[in-house]
Amino acid sequence: MRGLAVIFFIFFTWTCDAQQLFWNQAQVFVSDAALLHVNGNIESSGVNTILENRGDIVARNGTQNGNFVLNNRAFVNGNGIYSIEGDWINNADFISDSSQVILEGDNEFITGDSISKYYDLELSGTGIKTQQIDAYVAHRLQLNDRELAIDSFAMTITNPAPNAVLNDTTFLSEGFASTLNEGRLIRTMNRDTVYLFPMGSSVSTWRYRAVELEPATALGHVFAVGFNNYNATIDGFPISNHDSTICKINDLFYHNIDLLSGTTPVNLKMFYHPIEGFFNQISQWQDAPLSRWDTLGNDLQTQLNYAAIEINGVTDFNPNSFSLALLTPDAPLILGDTVVCEPEILWSYQADPENTGSIYYWEIPMDGLITAGGGTSIIDIDWLTSAGGLISVYEVDTNGCQSFSGITQVSLFPGLSANFDTVGNPLYGVFEFENYSIGADAYYWDFGDGNFSNEENPVHTYSLPGLYEVQLTVENSYGCTSISTILLEVDEGINIPNVFTPNGDGNNDTFYANSIGITDKSVLIINRWGKEVYSSTKLDFAWDGTNIWNGKAVSEGTYFYIITAESATKSYRFNGSLMLHR
Image (cartoon, rainbow, N blue to C red; front, side):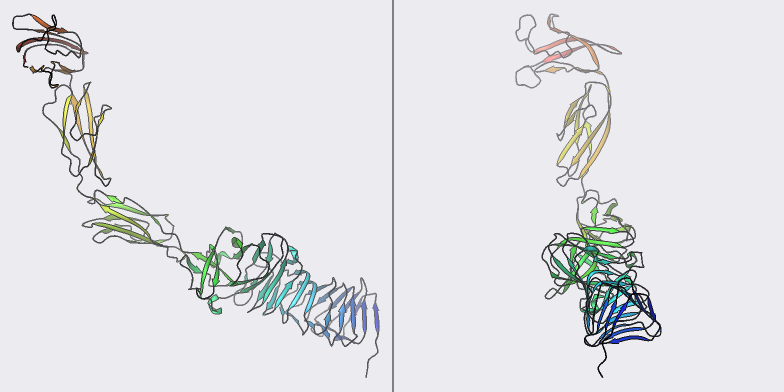
């Protein structure tokens, strides 16, 4: 029998304690500021059944669950509020206008065979709110501290405002959306600012692991994000398959991020809890033929309550699987001598940087021996009979990651030795140095008086008496050096020769007296008849064998000299004979 259409105008608060408030082929109007309160289910059913809500409709979990049910082509519209403690069951037509639906019970379902398109959807109360069908939100999804279990369906937010999705951000009490399989939280974007995807899961281990996407331009984008709270290997993305720059892939969870529309670059930020380990990269699964995780990079790494990794300018979201990764540590730099000139002593080598808690694995050339520091960043090597070769080291850090190997080539060049002495009788500051060095190719003499030489066997004259440290540094073609040092004592005095040959050959052509420490000097030379042939008061006199009076060369023979001199502490007088040969 066909029911009679009845119109209710509700201008006041009405509380119904019945198990169910049901109308069929009726028109119900809840006016502004009016309240329809039912301690049970509310069901609108049948063709031409209309519910227009401009006030508040409350379905409490009383004698029944507090479900809100639309059946058999019933029609609901209006800008009011729906506060539901039971399930939202839509098998008809729900026109949201600018209304607000609040799911405020315990575990509740969004279900039915018709897709609900909400204006505002808010989750409160306790328990999990679970979708059993796709749903849309035109204005705002307010998660508060609840879980929206999208499961294998889609929740699409068509409002492009960044704050169209809100949640409680209290640490470890965040509200979030969870997904299974192909389930996605979908957001429309038209701003160059951050859009939050508050993803998480309460399956097995409770996790809140948000994703933030920031388009580079205000051109339109649509992104869909899913969260998988388990090892990606389970879904056919083995975490053991990755490029060589990656040490390991996060084995606890991964995200699906689909770009449904849009082409401009997007900044991607992914979050994790530090108790899950340390990560420093975002990675993306690559399909066959690679079939592996490849690193995308890390442009910014931050940590407050959650750690975050951000990479800028991502354009490729196909394939859509993204995870956190830890890079293979860089090869340590080996510090130490690569040219060993004295292999008979111990030589130290250091892996740089030195990371606390890491273990270092060294390999050295055959016939060498690590005498100290095995497993640490610094070792001592006794080269023994080794001919040198490659030293390598890799690090296993506190994350269990093995670094690339650092390598250096060491060459051994034994046998270089610096040695020298003075030869002859060094008279009054003139010294001849005899070089006895072995294996040297270059020589660097420091005579201790500010003078230097690169000769192999130099002769050096000191101008002042004193104690001098003479140092010889020798070097071979491989850069090895060896040093020898002696002390020389230089006394003041005069060195007077007894023969000279003024024949113009450039060798011993003048008679002179080297001196050191002498401040005044005079000389008188006479022949054997007592006639003066030369005299001078210069410190550096030099007689060339000519007569001082007529400028003519004197004859060969014996001549006699008288030399007087003064130093700061002593007077000198020397008499002697001199042989002149031409």
